[in-house]
Amino acid sequence: MSGKKERNKERREKRLQEISLLRTLPYSDHQRWWSKETIAVVTGANRGIGFEIARQLAGHGLTVVLTSRDTSVGIEAAKVIQEMGFNVDVHQLDILDSESILAFIDWIKQKYGGVDILVSNAGVNYNLGYDNSVEFARRVIETNYYGTKNMIKAMIPVMRPSAVGARIVNVSSRLGRLNGRRNRIQDANLREKLTNLETLSEELIDRTVSSFLQQVEDETWQSGGWPQTFTDYSVSKLAVSAYTRLLAKELSDRPQGEKIYVNCYCPGWVKTAMTGWQGNISPEVAADTGVWLALLSDQAITGKFFAERREINF
Image (cartoon, rainbow, N blue to C red; front, side, top):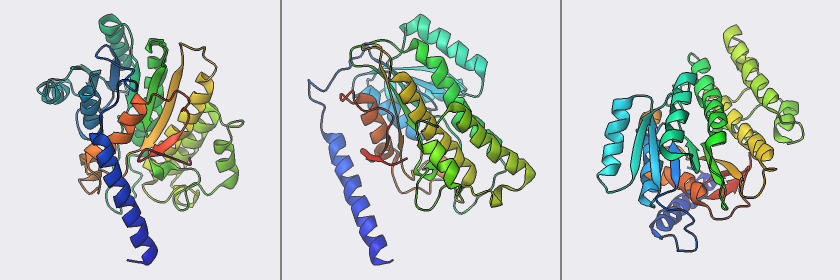
């Protein structure tokens, strides 16, 4: 291993140790704006990072709604957290199914009246190791980007007004960074348009992912200048991150008392089923930044991208 790689590894390990320590520190009374009446929804929470985010939020005293495509699997996951003495509810949700989303929204309104926190974790990835197949690219894009976006749009009307503001946390990835040094879109003009908030639009994001999918269909994507590592997943998370910034801008004009703060984060390469258990970070550590963002008392933070509790560039 080169000296630079060794130093980077040491820095990263030190930061993960710091996060593990931070996780042991309790929130002070003046930091705790939430209570058991605070409702947090976590999508795709029956396993992996989503389950751990749900467990940690419930452990901090919130009421968590754990969602799962498979009802029975969700119920079993919720039981594990409930047996710890925490407040966890469960409901079926498939973010690819508009009827499932509407049924969930109706249930939330009837049972809780609204929601304070949404953690958009549900997502898929079909590549492992050094694979870079785009066989399931359409499903990856539809789930990770369109499904996430459709769920957020459905949830915004039921997010409850409060002095501290509602929160949306989107699970994204460094693989989708626009200006990463290695795994990025090669078209500098497109990168600039997606980076600049003046030119960024939902239409531009949709057009970008549609262009990628068309090239996949035409079998020309490899020469299209797309990210070369887990290409379909990277493009889907690029879209999630871009939509996070756009949504934060669109919601910034809401009056005080009706604010919604939106951020995204990269959990890292996590040892879960999605990575074939090949990751180098535990779900407990991977969930930390998402939980931290959901519970932030600093209301000025919105439209940002984080990793390991630190802001990074999109």
